[in-house]
Length: 294
Image (cartoon, rainbow, N blue to C red; front, side):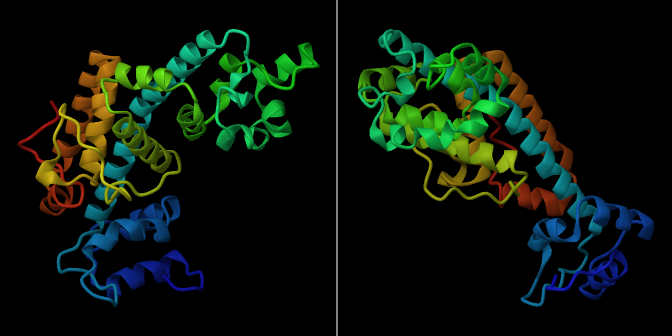
């Protein structure tokens, strides 16, 4: 798509000219284009382009592109739900252990003797007037305790993002607390734990912002731990990220882990009959239908 906006009639003609099999009624294709958008759908027909002119491989169906899009949506929704459980658990452990180790400092997240200055020097970027105004609990606290600069950690950290929570964790000075938390997730190597949490946050952010997920490649390799292995030794694919989420979830709830296994497998089984999508699942995603989550 160039720099000039086009209407759905021209967009449909452009797809025809590039060789796509438009196997829906034109009215339905217009509906998809106005619902999802030509530009966003481009990320999902990109795997079916055969040259620099963006022409499509013979037999590329519009319906396959739509199925790939909705597979991606389903995966984002599933992973968002289970990552949220991990995020809450991680936040709870951080607040609990650091707060109980520093009972005389309820706002320890802003205390440079407890949390490194890499975070505390920037605390007011997170805890600003907008933060106090738009979070009801925080606003109520400052209305009641007008002399408090910050609300206690168990209130404040509820409203920080996963990324900020991890930043606080990473800057906690007490290494024993950080190690204790990592061990509760079954990871005894602190460096590997950080890598795995960063992987989960990366996936979480992609899901939260509605970005394309199926072709994810992590910027650095995912750490190896004995509890799970990577298909084809690929430590950056979406399948590898799914395994990290699956493992962490299992440290919190075996029942939720079983639910995740079922949900993920249903998505991939649902597209297995389509050869083009199966190739993407086993290729780009690196999922192995014969080696399921365990």
